[in-house]
Structures are given as structure tokens and as C-alpha cells.
Length: 414
Ligand code: CTP
Image 1: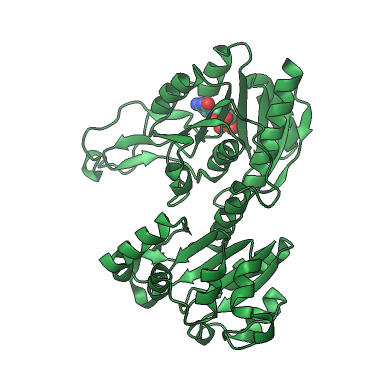
Image 2 (image 1 turned 180 degrees about the horizontal axis):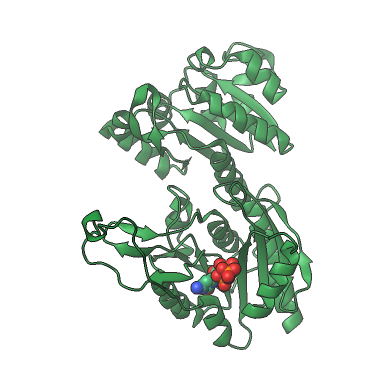
């Protein structure tokens, strides 16, 4: 794909170097268009070396090939990262006083922006209004995330991580029927997908949770919607920003839940009319027996430690399998940390036998594996424990491979 990456004058430009690297690694033809200000943060030689293409900031270079419009005309996708408040204002006004401005006006490709600025600037009514204008025009926004900002401030305004921008940007191209998008091969299917991690309260301020970011489950839901399915997404706790795209789509109904019991209720409700249910959520196995109505204080445990009594939650997936209707397909996930003497596959097979789902997507996890990343690798087992696929790649690619397996399973069952 021919991808233009606009870089504007913010310190987050250093993270865009990684974004460009990921795009080039993905086999794309990447053309970086920095603004004059941006090259004060990261210089032209870096952009040229990383993108492997010539880089200029000027509309007056390469005039014979009308570079000021050619880039925009050729682009399959335009990403602006970081997008400063100034650039967003210029985009909203349609200004074309530099190469990035002319490129943006000359393109009909999807445009994805990753804002980065101080919280006050992000919240200023002028920026809010400019963002509303851009959103109305179909520009897709990633972030900004909350966190540390330059100079010791913190709050919303940090540019999203390169992996998150990459994922959203490539999904735009798939969604608009370019790239390697599949056809609407799930049209007519009603699908329920659970995602994220449940939270079991201890008291009004504390909970027992887990590290699930919701990325894989949401990718499964979006992939189904892009392929024509009607989707209910049951979202437990998910990371900042990852739900934005699903919430904005008319073909995805998002239902928020907190605890495992709430998730069980919504999943059972959605399953009544769903042809396929995918349980990608990380559901708490235990809940606190007695939730304290008031915040627990150290005064109540003068001797030192405390003990929490935990009771087992219902297994939602097992309940869905027990109530499965004819023609309904149920997919489970299994997050495993294989112990010594037992392979991932052996553990997965045991779980597949115990759960009885039509497909079980087994996922190796660890301290630095499987969570909060844009990539994943699965081993997909059928009900008999036979490996049917081993997809790896972005969570979106993995999600599409999972839907391919669902289609195959349903075709075989007919
Ligand atoms: N699951 C569920 N209800 C639970 C626990 C898990 O529906 N109370 C579902 C998950 O959504 C996932 C699958 O079961 O699809 C496997 O989850 P996992 O946590 O790997 O398995 P557990 O059954 O909890 O087994 P263990 O933690 O002992 O490995």
C-alpha cells in the first residue's frame, strides 16, 4: 500500500519513527511528509533512512511531477502522527500552505490522525470544534491517551502508541474494501462477542481484576462487523481508547458490564438470538464472598494482613455450551501459562475437553506476553482437540483467521 505519514511539530515525533518502521516492515511503500516544525524534532535523514523514500517538506521540490498533489492522489492511506493542535486547526480550515496541507487536500484516501498536545490545548473549545469538524468529514482519530506529558504535566494529550495507531489505520483500509479485505461472508449472521476483563469488587474503591486489554476481543467483534455480521459486543473493562471504534459503529451494539455475574447475564441474553458466541473476555473465576459496603481500612486488621474469602463464579462458557441451540456455534478462548512438563497444546486440549466449545482459541500468556500488545498468536482447536489453525499477526489478522475457522466449522456442521 502507498501510505503517507504526515509528521507535525511535537516531541511525540520520535514515536512516529517506530510507526514508520512497522509500516515498512509490513511491506508498505511509506512516504513521510514532515512539516517545517517537525524536522526540528526528528530530521530528514532519519525519515529517509527509516522510510527508504526521499523526504522533503517543500511544495517546490519535484515540481515537474506535481509532488504537492501527487502524494495525496497516490495515497491509499494518510496518517498524521503526531497531529498538533495547530495542524488539526489547519486541517479543519483546509489550509494548504505546506506539503502536508496540499497532500491532505488532494487525497480521497482514509485519513487517520493521532493528536498529541498538552491537556489544556486538547480541551480548548477551538480544538474540540476542530475535532468535531474533522470527525464529521470522516477523519479517524486515535487517542490521545492519558499519561505523562512533556514538562512533567500529566493528563489526556499523549500520542497513542505506534502499535495502536497502526492497528486503527490498517483497519480503515480493510473497512473501506481496499487492502486484503474479505467480502461480506458473514452477512446475515448474528454474533455476540465478549471482551475485556471483569472486575470483582472488594469494597467501593477496590476490585480484583486482570490484565486483559480487550484488544483481541474487540478485534474479533470488528472483524465480524466488517464481514457483514450483526454484532453485540459485551465489553467488560477495556484499556483506554480501544472501544472507540466499536462504539462509533452502527453495526456493533456495545453493552458494558463490570462483574462476571453481569457478563453472564448479558451473554445469556445475547446468546438467545446469536448464531455465534465468542467468549474472548477474561472472566474472573472467583468473587469476594462478602463485599464490604464501606472502604476496608487498616483499623479493621490490627494484626497485619487480611484474608479475603472468595467463592467460585459460574463458568459462563460452560453455561452457554450447555444451553447451545442447534446451529449455534460457540467459541472459547484459553489464556495459558504452560508449566514445566506440559505443553501449551496439552493444556489447551484438556481445556477444550472440559469446556465443550465448538472451537477453543488457545493463547500463550506471560508477564510480557499476550497482553497490551497489537500482535497475538493462537492455536485453534476444535471440540475434539484437533488443531485447525495457528494464526499469528496483528490481533485483527488473528481475528479474521478465527472467523475463517468459524465459517469452516459451521459449513461442516450442516
Ligand atoms: N470463562 C467463562 N467463565 C468463567 C471463566 C472463564 O466463561 N468463570 C471463559 C473465558 O471467557 C474463556 C474460557 O472460559 O473463553 C477459558 O477461560 P480461562 O480463564 O482460560 O479458563 P478457566 O475455565 O478459568 O480455567 P483455568 O483458569 O483453571 O485455566
